[in-house]
Image 1 (cartoon, rainbow, N blue to C red):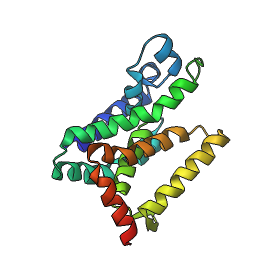
Image 2 (cartoon, rainbow, N blue to C red):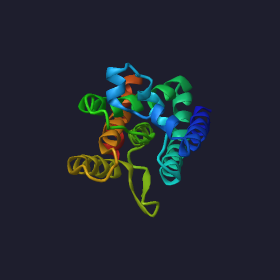
Image 3 (cartoon, one colour):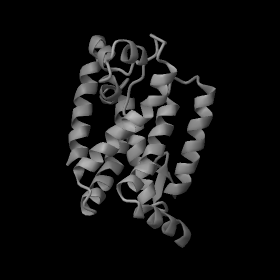
Image 4 (cartoon, rainbow, N blue to C red):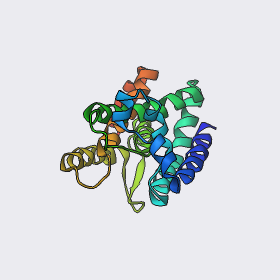
Amino acid sequence: MMTYVILIVTVVVSIACFNNYSLFNKLSCNPYRMVHSREWYRIISHGFVHADWTHLIVNMFTFLSFGLYVENQFVAWGFGSSSFLILYFGGMVAASVYDVWKYRNNQYYSSIGASGAVSAVLFTAIFLHPWDKIYFFAIVPIPGIVFGFIYLLYCQYMAKRDGDNINHNAHFYGAVFGLIFPVLLEPRLLQMFIQQLLRH
C-alpha cells in the first residue's frame, strides 16, 4: 500500500536529515533557490524532511490514521492507488505554492514537513464521512466537519499572527486541496457529501 511506502520513506529520509544539515538544507523548501536556481524538486522533497522526532511522529501518526482509510476507499471506488499518490503529493504542492510566491526573493526562508500533504489526506477523509468523530487532542471526540471548520479558522488566525515557526498556510491550503480533490476525481461525490451533511 502506498500509505506504508510513503511513511517508511519519510521516516528514513527524516532520520537521515536529523544529523545532516547539508542534506536537510538541500531538501528543504527554499523558495529563493527554487525560483532563482530552478531547484523545483524542493516542492516535493521538503515533505520528506522533519525538524525533530515530535514533528515526524505527529505527522506520520496522523497520516497513518487517515491515509489507510482514504487509500482503501479510493481503491474500492476504482480510483486506484495512483489517485491517492496524486492526493498526497498534490496536497504537498498546493500547500507550498503560496509560500513559494510570497518568499521567492527571501533567501533565508525555508519550510519543511509533510503537514500540507497530511492535511490534504485528513480533509479528504472528512469529506468522505463528515460526521465521523475525530479525537481533538486525541481525547475529545467531535464530528469531522466541525473539527475541519475550526481547524481552517485556526490556521488562518495563526497565519496572520505569524510568530510560532509553524507554516499554518501550508496546513490551510493542503486542507482545502483535500476537500476539493474528491470532487475532481468524481463530481458526483459532491452530491454524496451534501446528502450526508443534510441527513444528520
